[in-house]
Length: 282
Image (cartoon, rainbow, N blue to C red; front, side):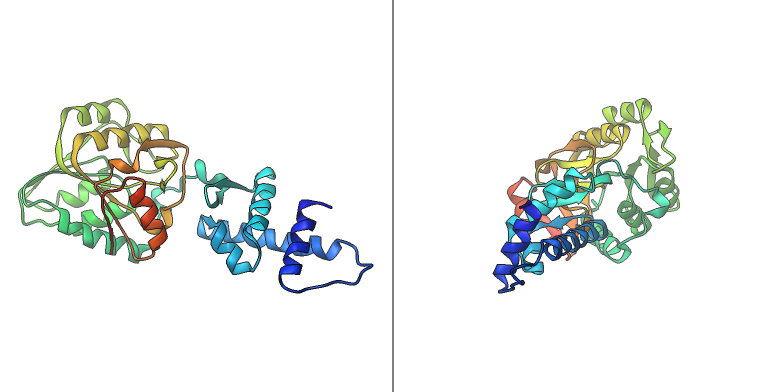
């Protein structure tokens, strides 16, 4: 008997189900296939699947879900990680900036909360990203601040506020994200020290910290963490539990994570235990 058949039998027993003694395994296989398709749909829609929650929702054992995930990973349809799974393409997936329009309400709440952490004077760094773009739109124009950013769109938003002294890092502009990368940007970051950096990310996980699909952006983000006295990460809860190809920071490098109320207590506790000093859910 295959693993899928054994799992289906165990689940049927768990729910008191029975089948005629002469029945083949076809119905069990069909149920297992339907369950696995449900897992694939969930991981693709949500971007992440929690094995324990899914087992409870489907009314099956955690071991059944684990075996389903092993099978789907072998077929290249998803990638397992601690406690669940993520889409197979998620390590290198990087939508263009223009397509990053999801979760706008959450991002604007995060940006609004971030305003409380903009210093009264001194220097600030704004990373590339859709949530930092929201912060740039709301950025106060009533104080003398030197602001650095690695994207031209953010710089153009900020330069309209007359009391700000706005600088871009320079360097090659990536068409996909409009972020400045490579040698010139790295040189600028090596020469400055800012009071607060407002940072974005593609993915956050307990196992791999912060990660991004592009090696050039990973190098820039790594330097951003080194150049800031205080590091504030702006990220909606959908990025938690995900991983991308290149790691650039540990969770212990984050002074404050500002996210939205969708972040569960369980995830918040795991992130704190892994090193994030403070989490604010806006």
